[in-house]
Image (cartoon, rainbow, N blue to C red):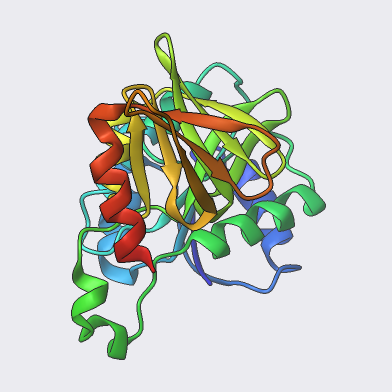
Length: 246
């Protein structure tokens, strides 16, 4: 993994560089400001950017937003002394949010998560039409009481709207998302199907449908010990999706 480091504090930057020497990565550059980072990123095309948030000229949040506009955007991990920017970090699709001083084990764990999410493509993959379809995430990055966590989309059983949030139910529990159900439906079309105005289910986990005389139904999902209601409005769509799956 090719890593670019950005921090306006030289001592912090040097400490991070020393830690990276103990990790299986290639450091391809360092920058002291957001503006330097953006220029360097276009030239060296890193897989991962480790950077502070509070920096002169262009701060880390704005720099991350601009990095996302690159043809092949790098994965971003913030290393900061401040806890109060985590929500903004999610909005610019940061993979992790580490608090200074960053420890070696913590950094290695973060690099592992970043590597899992890296969208670096080989020259052969760039010629594959399937790769050039609209990109969709394979992990959800969410803030929990344990910090930033990655939830594989393949482990999500269903999404359910709950007031202004959406709850993602996965193999190890549940997490709150600040995205709309419609946005998730659009992004994961073909992977999830709407069964109710408040619920999207993963097609790979649906085992069967049970029909009711009133025209409704309920869906049974693998690994769940309860069913989910399927409204009459979406029943035909669900049946088509299940037939196409098989």
